[in-house]
Structures are given as structure tokens and as C-alpha cells.
Length: 166
Ligand code: SF4
Image (cartoon, rainbow, N blue to C red):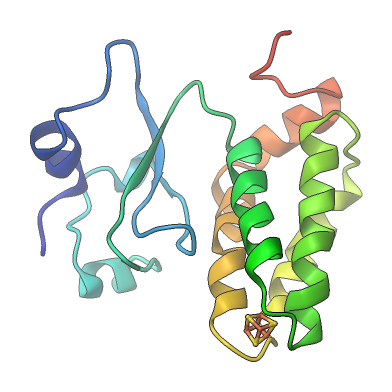
């Protein structure tokens, strides 16, 4: 507890691969928010993360480099939450598949600017779900929009994933 993220990555995890630069990480599994580069030196403990407006979650760190499309990563995570929802309450049961479809369309060149505000509204809506699964599940989407909205816009403007030149 309290070890800096940078030390965990560079010392204890052996560092980034050659040519890879830190872009973001999920600090504590799929239901935490992306931490962008400005948090690279944050101390990894519950209180520091809370003060920074983030959660440590499970502490299972997933690191993404500069070549990783975070729209695709968020789509992958949202696919998981859509599949794992128990279906008991409506916002979660209907919301995750709806947001997954919006993210899929953005990632595959079919996005529209209005999707961004719809995703943002849906995230707030899912906070009305019954259990903590849904608010946790929207954390990647909320942080994608908070820190990497430019990347979402780029997908919509180019009508393709800018990380995929094929
Ligand atoms: S929020 Fe919880 S109770 Fe509601 S559908 Fe999702 S997993 Fe089930």
C-alpha cells in the first residue's frame, strides 16, 4: 500500500516493453476508471486514490500503451458487463447492451457526435441501478469521456478507428 504506480510498473513489473509508452491504466480491474498519465506517480492506496477521485478497486492493474485504442478497450470491458449483468434491474440490464452498441458503432466507423452525450447520460442513469455492479461497470466509459474524449471524436470524424490503418 502506498507504493507509487510508476514504481510498480518500472521496478516490480519490469517496466514497459521496448517502444511502449504509458498511456493509461485501470488501477483495480474492469470496474475502475482509466488513470491517464497525470496520475503516473500516484501512491496506490485507498485514501490517496479516493482523494484523487478514483478507486483502487481490486488492485489488479492493467496498463495500456500509446498504441492501444481506448475506445476498443472500453468496448471490450462494456461487452463483459453487458454479458455479466444479472438482469434484475432495468438500467443495468438494458443500459450496458445499449452502450456496448454505441461504442461498437464508434469503434467501427459508424459513430455520431451525439453518441458522446448519450453515453454520458446513460452512465449517470446506470448509477440508479440496484447494486454496485452497474456504477462500477460505467467507470471505464466515464473516464474514457473525461480523459480521452478527443480519441472518441477522432473515431467519429475519421469514420474509422485511428489506431487501425488496415
Ligand atoms: S445492477 Fe446489480 S442487480 Fe441490477 S441488473 Fe445489474 S447486476 Fe443485477
